[in-house]
Amino acid sequence: MTTVIKNGTIVTADLTYKADVLIEGGQIIEIGRDLKGDEVLDASGCYVMPGGIDPHTHLEMPFMGTYSSDDFESGTRAALAGGTTMVIDFALPSPGQGLMDALKMWDNKSTRAHCDYSFHMAVTWWSEQVFNEMKEVVDRGINSFKHFMAYKGALMVNDDELFASFKRCAELGALPLVHAENGDIVAEMSAKLLAEGNVGPEAHAYSRPPAVEGEATNRAIMIADMAGVPLYVVHTSCEEAHEAIRRARMQGKRVYGEPLIQHLTLDESEYFNADWDHAARRVMSPPFRNKQHQDSLWAGLASGSLSVVATDHCAFTTKQKRFGVGDFTKIPNGTGGLEDRMPMLWSTGVNTGRITMNEFVAVTSTNIAKIMNMYPKKGAVLVGADADLVVWDPAKSKTISASSQQSAIDYNVFEGKEVTGLPRYTLSRGVVTVEDGTFKGREGHGEFVARQPGTPVGRALSTWKELTAPRPVSRSGIPASGV
Ligand SMILES: NC(=O)NCCC(=O)O
Ligand SMILES: [Zn+2]
Ligand SMILES: [Zn+2]
Image (cartoon, rainbow, N blue to C red; front, side, top):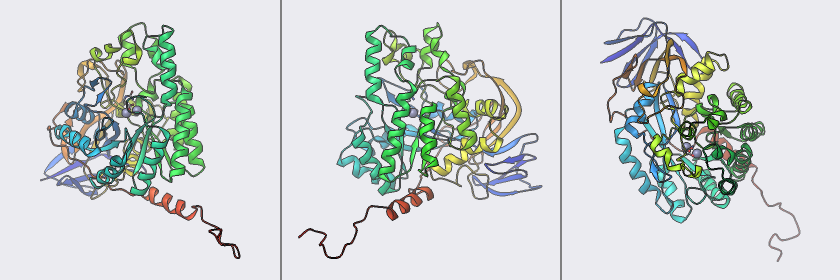
């Protein structure tokens, strides 16, 4: 059985051209003019693009005394509805728990996925066991390790642990990721704010100013440089963090920055809303920033100093958010966005001229596939690639509303936003999962995507670090040992 996508314009990270796409066995088998297939999908007036890849989700994650409410079923359903065909979720060992043990838990949760998925492994504590298990994790096809520099007393790791883990990543050809906020300072500022009676959700933003993120981002970059490993900074939200990434990249350091669609399009005024629920629903770390920071992030996407756009989808219901009434530090941190990332970025980025269509494909899919080492299986419209595709109708509009969303939560942080640019079809390995807003996917269709260690960039950096490593100077006459 073959499927052909006809009459569309293919848009990749570097090309825009008219051609049909023929699919068989879940893969693209031919790209050309006047192709024929058993099933025909009409893409007239549409762009045919690699499906989105969200490199940062937390589905059914235990966090702050509860679990995020979207699991692999509702989360990946939401993803496909918005044109995202793959997610990379975080396997999160609790401190003291083995990595392989945590991985088993994530293997179990993910059996319900509608679309393909992969995992990052979090390093939430450090020991010989963690050191050893990192190799087993890599052998299982997980080549990226996340470190929290925030959430003191819970997930946070210190600089010595970061350095040890980053060096291990370098040895294994893996990529370290960081949540870059100075957790010590956040803890102290939070305690002071609470003591002064600043208990509402707005105090969450006061407790995590841009300097907290800029400092940690710069520190992580320098530690990664000393460990000789590339670095991926998740949810880059402000100029201070972007500035550290930009400077590092201009110095030749291999650093990637990941803004979220939330930080690009929503600002700190949300926290000053008179409705407690409205503000608390938007509590996430780092918090939303002002317009100047948003402009910085957009400029980073246009200039290439920031590499990808994610969601950090970690959705809590209003009831869960209310755990923090009277104490903002107890509001579960996180927001949703899986269904809205692609339409929101297209509407606020491509339709406004802030980024091109090709840049859109790069930051939502292709760059992610390359950085995470699964290109061109994912993130490409090429013969042999998986047929994870979105047929994108640039004229189709809707108003975002919780009442019509796939996510399990009872609100949407983008409520009321008008978007123009939506999927006509979303295909997961050749199977139509969404057609004109109707979900047709199948629970359990999603497969784990193994990612090998050793990206070209990681290998180049290792070669350079080895070439420039400190070496003893050989001198005649004086024995090196001093004897
Ligand atoms: N970002 C956030 O507030 N929640 C999810 C966990 C994390 O990524 O820090
Ligand atoms: Zn984080
Ligand atoms: Zn996250």
